[in-house]
Image (cartoon, rainbow, N blue to C red; front, side):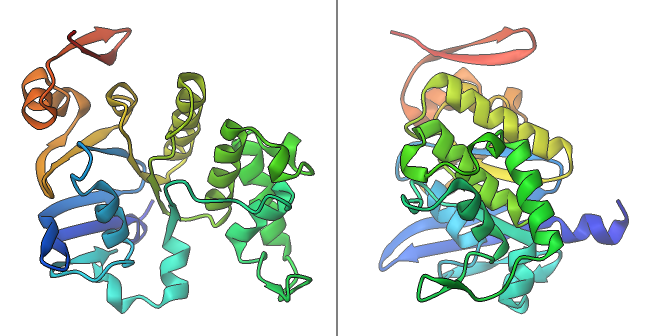
Length: 266
């Protein structure tokens, strides 16, 4: 990857603050996210995790600081340019029940824009078809291509949503609690899919509640009361003292086969 390409694949919060009315939701957050890295964003409820993702995407007005993409202010990017760099998987994002899995994934290419719900506004290109096929193949949803979303399980739907986001071929993917309401097996599967994409050069920023899943990330950003409490490797952030300080819960952190396991003390 050239120096120019490397710079394009960076997203940075500089002293970022976001407020809802008189309530400050983010307070002077500084963080940098790059392609080829998986970053877990953790923190208790109300810490500002979802707000951070939405602020990074330009979906919320900022009350201070700025967001920079590839070294340029996010506001300087045209929407179409920004969409080629950033993709977003929102928390609990609904999928159209009557659509097929393939058509839902096609939405990631903008090929799912329909006139009166009947006629596509533009035809798929060969590039679109290849991107959709690859995204479905990499998320193990190709075998579900002709199935209706209504007939998919919760884990399958989340993989379909991930395939749709990947079909856009972004450099950076932001995901808000993608493992929410998934059992342990499906949650692990989703993180494995993300790890494979990151190994291929994608940058992923994912909000998680499960601290053991967060330990699979390259870096962990710990938020509390809208501020960054810690940002570093899992071993640096997922410590008993930091977790007790932020969550008010005592834990024991074990290492098993090179992985951290965070176990609450009862």
